[in-house]
Length: 263
Length: 281
Image (cartoon, rainbow over all chains, first blue to last red; front, top):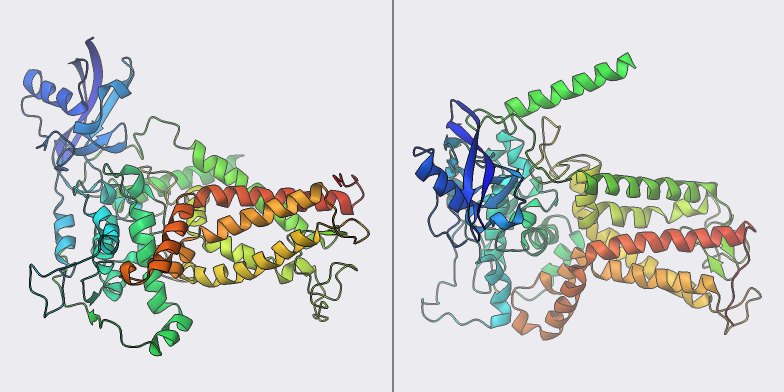
C-alpha cells in the first residue's frame, strides 16, 4: 500500500549546505535507499549518494537516518510511521564531499597503519593448519563490511576532530584484536595498539557495537579483550614476572614500522 | 535565578563553541547545526542510570559512614563484612578483628574493594561515562566537552587495574559466602535454622559471584589471553562458560547492586529494632 512520505535530506558540500524538504512516494517493501533513488529520479537528479550492493554487504550507503548511523539499504520504510518525517544526513564524523557522500579516507589511512598478518617464516602459504576453535574468535571480526559506522559514531573522533591523528577508532582496534588473537600470527601488536592506534581513548561506551549492521560485538569481543591483553603486558607486574619463568612459547616479534596517517 | 540562567547560557555557548571547533561542526564536515537529529527518547537511559547510581551511592555512603546497625545475629551487613576493627560489635568480628588503630566506621576498611571493582568495571564505565560525564550521553548525541583524552591519563588510566579489584573482590565473595552459610543459624547461634535474612544473604552472595565471574577480566584470565584454545581444552571450556556469563554482565551488575541494598537494609531494619526476623524453621 503506497503513501507519500515526508523526507528531509541534507544537501550541500564542504562549503556549506542545509536540510531540504521533499515529499516522496513510498511503496510496500521498500527501504530508505529506494526512496533516495526515487528522489534522484523524480525531483533531485543531482543528489549525490554512494551505494553499490543494496544488500547490506558492501558498506557503501552508510548515512544517518533520523540521527542514527544506518545502512540506507537495510533500513526498511516499514519501521517508520506514515506520518513520520524522516531525516537523512551524511555521516557527521567525516568530511563531506557532496550531499550524502563523505570522504572516508581517514579509515584507509588508519588501515595502512595496522601491521599485516605475519605467519611463521617457515610456514608456506597453503600449509596453514588451524583448529576451528582457534580461529573462530577472529572469524567474527571478518564479518566486518567496512561501512565505517562504528568509527562514525565513536565520540572520541566524532566530537573531537583533533583525536583523528592519534586514534584509529573501533574498526581498526578490532582489526588489531583479530590479528592478535590469530593462532598463526607472530607479531605482538599490543604496543602498537596503544602508541599508534590510541586504544586508551576508548571508554567502553559501546556505541560501535550498537550501530554495527553485522552485529559484531566489537566492544566485548574485540576492544575489551585487547585492553585486557595490553593490561597483561603493561599494567600487570604479577603476570609479567610469572611470564619470565615460563618456557619460551612461540616467540612473538615486535610490530614492524607502518606508514602513519597523514591527517 | 539570574546567575543560573547566566551559567546555563555560558554552558550552552561552551557546548556550541566546542562543536564548532572540534566536534560535529568541525570544518569540512556537513554543517547541520543540531547536536543530534535523533527523534527517539535517547535521554531516558542515561537519566535512569544517573538516578539509580546516585541513589545507590547516597544509600551506600549513609550506611558505610554511619558505623551502626550492621549486625543482628546471625546476619551481618555486606558493607561491614569482614569486620576487621576492634570496634566491631560483639559477634560480628572477623579473624579476631585485629585492627585496633582504626577509629572510623569499620565498613571503610573493606567497602573500598567493591567500590573499586564496580568503578573500574567495563559495564559501569559505560554507565557513568554516559550518564554522569555525558561522554557521550547517548550514541550520535554530541558531548558537551571541548577536549577528550579517554583513559590514557591519570586518574582514568587506573581503570586498567580492574583485574586487581577483581581478585580482591573474589576474596570478599568467599567471605560473604561464609556469612551466608553462618546465616543458617538462629539468633542464639544454633545451626539448622533459616530466616528471611538467610535468603537475602544467600541470594546476594550468589548474585555477587555471578557478577564477578561474568567480569571481562575474569574472561581474560581464564582463557581469553591465550591464542591456541586447542592446546588448552580445560581453559577453553572455562572461557566458553565465562563468555556466556559475560554476555549478561550488565544484568548481573544491576541485580547484584540491588541485592546488596536489600540484604543490607534488612540487616539495618533488624539491628535497629524496626522489624523482627521472619523465620521459616
